[in-house]
Length: 520
Image (cartoon, rainbow, N blue to C red; front, side):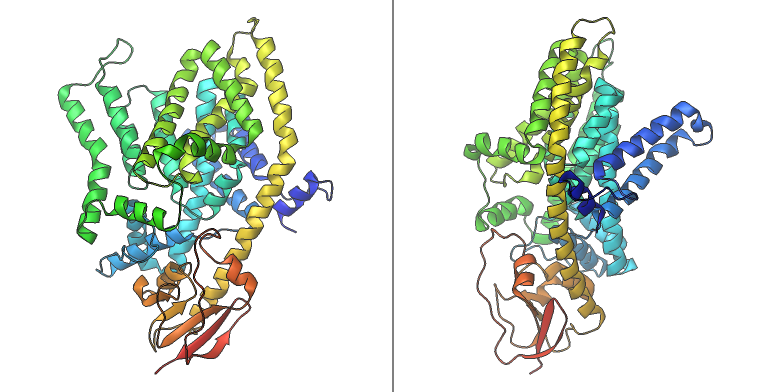
């Protein structure tokens, strides 16, 4: 029984907690609490300050992986690795294939750097980086919450973040949205520690802007803030310095547009193709849907108890701890505004695009429960805030079994997908899937980037039967209805009925896949 299964059973009174495991929230708690304890005990004399955070993050990432019991690269990330692999062979990345994801220049650069290591190692390192980014997000949120409202608030914010099912799900599948979130949060932490920090913040936002274009808007707004008349507390920048910072802010969009232009001849390829794909798949887009769907997406990530805590923390901290809360409130509002602006350009209002706003609300939920600790000991407002925070904390604890159950269900589903994917990889490793007789046919678009990466070929050599039927080669068919149902991009996407190409005969297979071949 996996650790998540055991924890889910505990939440329903079915089993005892395995002694060697703890849920993801307890992992972050143990990691952060361990660091705090070492500091108080004077261990910092033996452990340099600069190494404590990386070690805590690495340990947390390892424990998250052990408890999740699953980890693999998703469709979008696999395509990024494939395109990087193509670049390593001096080929142009094939962006224009049906249902291909939006290209992310930084991910392609990673794929290019990892290409010499081979497909298996490249994918493994990418997954490891995904877990490290997930753990680092927890660490940075702890630091932000600590800086704004105290350590207890920061710790609770980290626990909440690392127990959100969508965050965990995207983290274990190495989506670019988690490293993007980390870069943006790290930029916010630097600005929290040193106002008008300038270049370090823009560098991090620039890297984030090579993963998601929302960071371009953050960079632009931050540059305008830097250009605002200075105060005695925050000296301003000279015109020459502002010009240099403007170049930093513009670097990410310039690189992305240039990349699209060089590959496709259209500098706006990513925008137009993303809009086209969203329309083709029936995704929710448009400013008219913003009032309904943005709150719905954020609510789906956080759930009601956290939303209540965030509302309490937001109101009380802005009333009584305004200086502390101001930067977080501004960041949260900006995240929602930029999210809404992206929707006006026809981009989908997806759940993962709400991660930034949801993360800030995690910090304010921490403030709702423990923000009173930032008030002076004799302050009469501590009592009412403490009482309200205690009610929120009870609500969070009561909701924990349901959260663990949801996590168990999601991770179990992902484990089945990984098992199916591993069976497909095994057929490649056994040389059962080859290009000797022609292209490789697959039942839908989901296996295309995985097979292209593992076979070391252009993704156009892997053909979806929903788009075209191969005449010769190898056709890969699901071995059961369960595999057919589990291994698709999205259950809500439109699907076309497909069949084994005429004249193909069964050659081999395993528990998840059957292979059919025809050489002439």
